[in-house]
Length: 111
Image 1 (cartoon, helix red, strand yellow):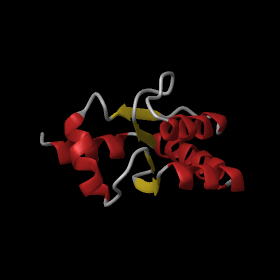
Image 2 (image 1 turned 180 degrees about the vertical axis):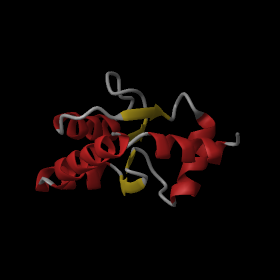
Image 3 (image 1 turned 90 degrees about the horizontal axis):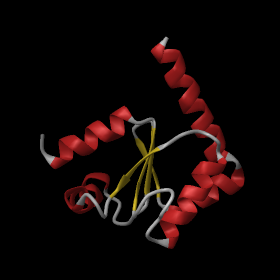
Image 4 (image 1 turned 30 degrees about the vertical axis):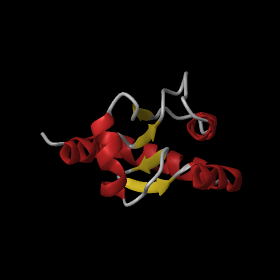
């Protein structure tokens, strides 16, 4: 499987996926830390990929997503954006709503 196929699979298999620097417990940059805080506050589990541990994904994902920076939040296969967008959506209550709807939709599809 090439790197683009791996990225596509990760995005498809994980309803909420954050590509970040570091891990939720030990983020390696302030932007990733802020994104994790907003996602954690939404109360649902989310997957993450540490791009520092995956240099091939770090190199390919900006081209694939047409988004140059990290973190990148993907929900239900769609790129929502980086730290500023995540925080803005959270402050408006949009992030919580989208995440809840995505989790409910996935639960319904799995039954």
